Amino acid sequence: MGFAGNVEPCFIIPTVVAVNESFLNQSEGSNKENWLAQYNAGIMADLDFFIGEEAISLSRSSGIYNLNYPIRHGLVENWDTMEKFWQQSIFNYLRCDPEEHYFLLTESPVNSPEDRECAGEIMFETFNVPGLYVAVQPVLALSAGYATSKSEMTGVVVDIGDGATHIVPVVDGYVIGSSIKSFPIAGNDVTQFVLQLLRERGELIPPEDSLDIARKVKEMYCYTCSDIVKEYNKHDKKPDKYIKQWAGIKPKTGASYLCDIGYERFLGPEVFFHPEIYDGDFTTSLPDMIDKCVQSSPIDTRRALYKNIVLSGGSTMFKDFHKRLQQDLKKIVDDRIDASNARHGVDIKSQPVEVNVLSHPIQKIAVWFGGSAVASMPEYYEKDFQVDDLKAYFLIKHHWLLIFHMAKRRVHQIGPFRFRYC
Image 1: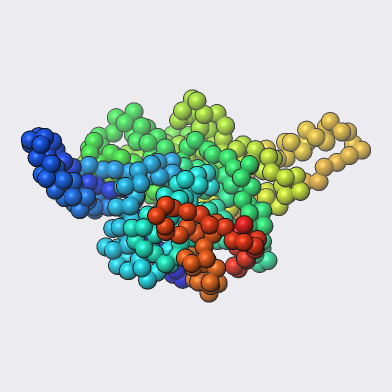
Image 2: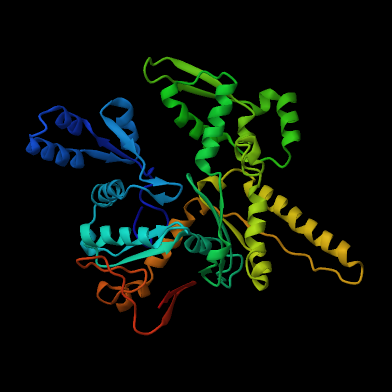
């Protein structure tokens, strides 16, 4: 979260809320007819909550706070909890008056119109914001990875978050909805797999800190290899060079401990290329899924899509991840071309296809960076983007949440982005 025009977000925190439910438990144990006590307990429970790292810390140190995750697999599941998260974010972290600021929210490419309406209802009814725009994450991420200086908004966005992975083709700033693909493995699955490998090897990790340690191991030590068999041999021949040690302190006893970090360093990211090592139900790799996404797009856009594959999300930051992805995807494309040439003989030859996977320093926050750029443009605050005239993605407050449409169809272009109102 942060303010428009900034290069980096002001805060990066996990989307989690710790709620004190002891008030509700006390009211349930009291006289059922004491409705006033139950009402007051509900109010106290609504007021006593924390978000982010503070929520995780309190849940560990105290037994009265329960963790609630409002977002699962990129979609909001609990809007009451999501409202609490936004409340703390606006007033305690950003410390701003929502009635004086326009807001830009990002959404998953598979988000439903009903969820978009819920977000607008909360923003306008609860926080009374003057204007709101809900942007699709891949379109924002694409702006941070231009292949050329022409600012062409055509490419495939591979967005790997903590709970969901989406492969989204974008042509001239518009998402091809029918070609969106979802990959069943995301960043949290890599963390769980690293933890599973550590436990299977018998590493003595405190249970209360196991998930956090696995996440830190993933972020600090994991990398992508080009050949998994060669990597096994390297670790076996020179263990002192490749095996790392994790040193920690047990939170309950204060005793220090050590654990070895070995094969999981390269096996963690390998689940994107061989998902069957994590779950036997998944056999389609990430490069295969990207290829299916492009092949299901209009035929006249495929070469441009292969040429500009943009990575987004923290789980794409593994060392050499983009090189391995480009290597495997290029092999799939070349094998198809070779098979086509073999079928048609020497008379007809297919032209080679350029495959380019882009990696850039800000791909971890690419969506936020793109949103910051859009929201900082003067056109963002023009008349068409205010509450009185809103239509399409802008929602206005009424007794019932309504979506109004403009009388005339217009297309506005803001920098490299095109927004259509109908």
